[in-house]
Image 1 (cartoon, helix red, strand yellow):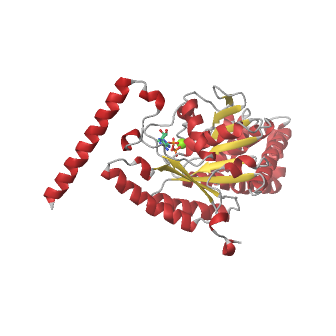
Image 2 (image 1 turned 120 degrees about the horizontal axis):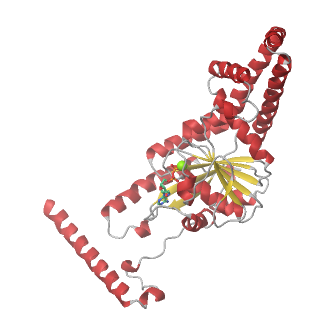
Image 3 (image 1 turned 30 degrees about the vertical axis):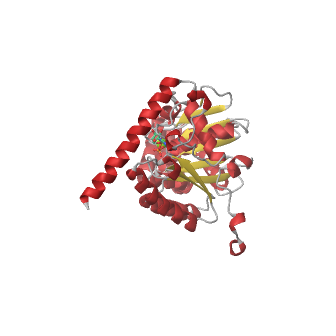
Length: 373
Ligand SMILES: Nc1ncnc2c1ncn2[C@@H]1O[C@H](COP(=O)(O)OP(=O)(O)O)[C@@H](O)[C@H]1O
Ligand SMILES: [Mg+2]
């Protein structure tokens, strides 16, 4: 298809495709730290909540910041986001205490057994808690779940959990097969009914394994799962994104959307040389994104002059995911002031002063540059 692709068939530069695909159940949002993953996952969740019945946003980043983004404290159980009737949020601890994993705590022997297993298979404890979260989440019947994932390396580990856990569980099974008789004999000697204990443990393990297998299959199904990559128009981020996209392909996880955050639009540069230079640098990397990812939806999000925090800020920002951002003309760029502002003479006066000062600075900068030559 790409051979015949012309300018008209360039993929829409929005996440409308994600919102429209009602079959999607698992939506991962990931990328390098600090690029705006949390902001984007919350924004996407807000837009999904407008059209889907019940939406959950989960953070698996140890540096939780859903709470910061919505300015509301969340915990490891889902709670309703203020100002919404169908949007829930929860923050999951990726470094769990195994004894807290439902059904595995309680009897000391079991936890000891599991602790032994978990030290012999790296990542198994994390994977166990992930499986437990998935089990919990599946039982709540959300229409879709948005994952605000941890920075890149961590994200990919999370996607390996199903296979890590499966490996661990298989090991556990084979241990049971080879030592099963012995384990039950010892258990019988230690406590009457001990044999049941081993079988119970196996039952729980089997159950978690089934969850993991199911999740594993669902993550590889592009009707159910997609991964939205978030980045910024800079060299390192471009590089990280390419690595991420390759890894996702390796894990057979669908990805077809790239959100480029913190874009400075030329219209908003004003007279700042620094910003103008930044725009040129960003443009270089934006061009590379467009070249490399022709078959992706590339969504540009504007750098704002303040943080995106609180439900209202997120709501406003989220609009840019579905409607490509176009900068408003700035009054100081010679455009007439909006009518509402015009009625406030003090404000107008201040704006005029700012404009005059800007012009003066530009003149002085030009003089300085000339003097340096
Ligand atoms: N486009 C933007 N303009 C201004 N501030 C932003 C923008 N995107 C994110 N931020 C702010 O940058 C900080 C980091 O964003 P966040 O979404 O928490 O990143 P991450 O989850 O990738 O670490 C937050 O304070 C957020 O409000
Ligand atoms: Mg974050």
